[in-house]
Amino acid sequence: MLAISLGVPVVQLLLLGLAVSTDVEHVPTVISDMDNSVTSRSLVSKLENTRYLDIQYRTTDLQEVSSLLQEGETILSVTIPSAFERDIVRGQQPRISLSADAQNTNVALTGAGYVRRIILSWVQQQTKSGTSYISAPSVLTNTIDIQSRISFNPQLKSTWYMVPGIMVLLVTIITIILTAMAIVREREIGTLEQLMVSPITRIEFILGKTLPFLILGMMELSIALLVIRTVYHVPIEGSLPLFLGISILFIFCTLGIGIFVSTIATTQQQALFTAWFILMFCILMSGLFLPLENMPKILYNLTYINPLRYFISIVRDLFLKGAGLHELWKNILALAVIGFVVMSAAITRFHKKME
Amino acid sequence: MNNGNVIEAQNLTRKFGNFTAVDSVTFSVGKGEVFGFLGANGAGKSTTIRMLTGILTPTGGKGSVAGFDIIREQEKIRRNIGYMSQKFSLYEDLTVEENLAFYGGIYGMSSKEMSSARKRLYERLNMGDIRRRLAGSIPLGWKQRTSLACAIQHNPRILFLDEPTGGVDPLSRRAFWDIIYDLSESGITVFVTTHYMDEAEYCGRISIMHAGKIITIGNPTVLKKEYRKKTIEDVFIYLVSNADVQTNQSNN
Ligand SMILES: Nc1ncnc2c1ncn2[C@@H]1O[C@H](COP(=O)(O)OP(=O)(O)OP(=O)(O)O)[C@@H](O)[C@H]1O
Ligand SMILES: [Mg+2]
Image 1 (spheres, rainbow over the protein chains, first blue to last red):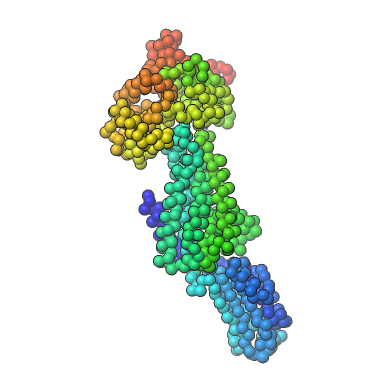
Image 2 (cartoon, each protein chain N blue to C red):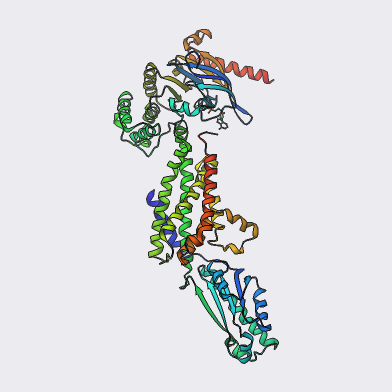
């Protein structure tokens, strides 16, 4: 049993890490138009009128741009240099710089690709309509130099983005399902009834049923960490003890969910079914496979109650950006609140009673 | 606690939705008695036991066990009773000895107390040979003894046994009843449910339950005389078919 619960996730980690890809739209973008000329504004409006990008900020403060990227507020930044119009007129290649937060390689690369295509199609348009100073189509590609800089995940490894998420996922699945099943199993075989008539307290029982899975979850996590370091070479830029500490907090949430499921279900099938339902929600709304930005508002608001969402974001920031307490505290607080609420609800629902 | 009764139930009732599983039952059990709780499948025996042991809240009536109220003082009751549920609840992947140690630990017994209790029980229940076997791998008769051992190792004053002999061969059943007698002689009150009518003959007093109601209560010999039947089985059949006729009449 122990071998299976520890071994299977490793295999899954290896398989899933290689098998993920997603569609991208509405990539959060910041535009800095330093030129603010007729020409540059025409390009900006072109960039604005596409569903591929979502221009969330416009600023000429480059400091702000880099902090927006750093904090994950936007994934792309497009900077049009100050002498843009003049340089085009003079036939000197102006340089548009494109920065991408490539933690989520898929979104960043696709987004950067969109920007390139949009700029090229704008150049093409300008040439055709004759409104511009760009004359010969042959120089099309040479008109503007697009310089891209991909930060935080310089080697562009999509696996670096996915694999830590999958590690988190596996721990979530294991701890929720095993906790729920363990309690419901006792209900099914009748030992729970036997325990209910004994002087054991609710808290003692719940501790006894969850502590082993906390330990198992942490073992799982350690093995997975080893795999993602040695097989995928995912960097862990941030503090490892901080990560382990937050992991305990997160597993506290999942154990609470597990107990809660066990108070709803009377058979192991029901427990498994309910646990999967909750897991499906947590996984789909976590931002791991589907970017949260693309979600309808109602669904997006639902993600606020999803502990997995916060933990995946924490893990990515901590691993790839080296984020510390200072950057992560909001997400950590969210986890703590969810853990407290879920655990209280679970304990309140769990009675030493049969009804 | 009134007049030495360790178990009392007054109009105890439990409904599940519209269905009344236990319908206003009243009875009492004195200290050291072996009280047989008879009834067919679904009569409401387990439901009554669960209310007395505090794991099911009555929807009506009241009761006390060991002098404590079954609704308000469940935790105090728990320290004074042993309970063997209908399912012989053992951890099948633990050995017999580990099961005993686990349940002993839950009752807060020290390892010294537990090992002396175990020694006594192995001897009394004649189960020395199976102590290292996995509980899942031993025959039903032995599982039954192991469950009993788990239920009595902390020296409860009152023992609730819910169909302890279900599915067990006649020889094991007889041996089991010998143990129940032993326990009763040492002052333990035994409340035992069964639907084996022959076992009723072993009890000091019995009640017969039908469709949630207690239809008669008394000493087996006295009951046989009263209804002029040779066996409790005959008394049971006579009373239950009578009760059915009455319900049918009142329905019409
Ligand atoms: N939790 C419950 N919800 C709904 N109905 C229940 C519940 N528990 C018991 N019942 C019903 O109450 C009735 C009495 O059940 P109970 O288990 O007390 O019978 P019993 O006399 O112990 O029978 P058996 O000999 O089969 O163990 C049955 O009809 C049963 O289906
Ligand atoms: Mg029963």
